[in-house]
Length: 546
Image (cartoon, rainbow, N blue to C red):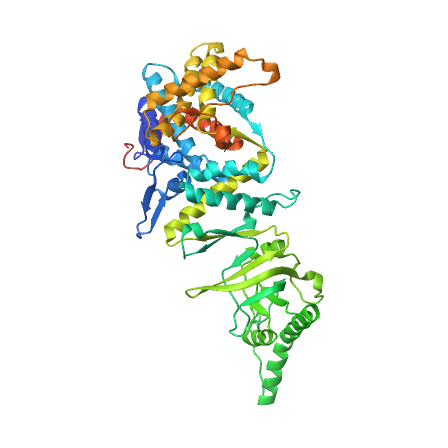
């Protein structure tokens, strides 16, 4: 302490019990804040920014990102939990609640004189045992729509009301299966565009088997609706560009000026003529359409030439849409028109333009085997659209995780109840005071079903007694049956509608294996680090309290 004071006289130092108290109070405060959001019947929170913007959400990741957390321990837990969400897409609220409960239980034991190091050893042993239990509970699933629907539904039902969650469940599963294609390529969720339109209601959100671009044709004479369209996707300049160095043209007469101007535009006219010739070749006298989507600009004379031929041209398309267009419509994204052929073109059955106030939207639909799709989010208010967008992100990640893991684990607190029971048996094989760490971890896991019961309006003690009795009866039944035949009883979870025990697999409540695994690892490590902190030094700050 003296050394730190010499280096920085303004440093504030908290040691031993005070340092531990700071960590525990921060973790417990964050736990109380987030606990009411857990589960389908969790409450929502309204966040108001200094500018007056409103965001209503129950997504733990959004809350931790948006809130300005000052407490150092709470801020560290928040950063760790949001990092967990960024990689896995879910599990933020559960992670925060479990860390807070571990530190809350540890506070009682440490106050009785138990050394934190012995406690942490027991917690780490419990974590390893819990991972073994998790592996024993996972169930393999096929990568098909019927098996993925419950996974997406479980994730989305914790973020949105049931009607909206049911609609988005189908949309998310169909979108991921569409971009997966034959399953040979790596799944990339960036191939699912989330487009917002502030109109109608949330229930009008839909999946477009193609793309929605947030701009339209740039000439009034261009067609607004094209059917059976060939699509040329390119990144070619079709406008006059400034030179890369400072330069000037000098002329003596008006004729010389006209020659300069015509020659400058000649190479652009040649490119436009190649596009028009290809259009005439592939369309002929049929009613098929032709669309040009260019990443660079198209000047007014070029637009007039294209419009005269009935070609719909979109300019300055976003770079991220170039790959999506090729994957949705086929063809190639060209950077030169020197060798322009019919096989370079994509195809879409229907391309139409919609107006929303002053914004144009171009719908590219009816693609052949699209591996890039768009989810069009509709809503009347910005905060509604933001809530749906955040929920869609979690739902898409849940499906992605299930496909990568090829397995799921039961939800509704079933894993926590099973692990609680098994860890109580396991602690008898642990020698010394580390037993108390195992017992602490086992009791802490029950915070998940307890919180689900509280948020659903049931009595905690009565609900936990029912669940633990049902879990014990299930294990007794398993011992009597012939285990060689693999006839084990189903897991026991909490029915939030009745408060009674139920089978999560039968109810279709399934969690991601990788999310649970990561949650156990991160919770035990973060809680261990906080318990072993014996000194908190804040240099030049005002106070360590709070």
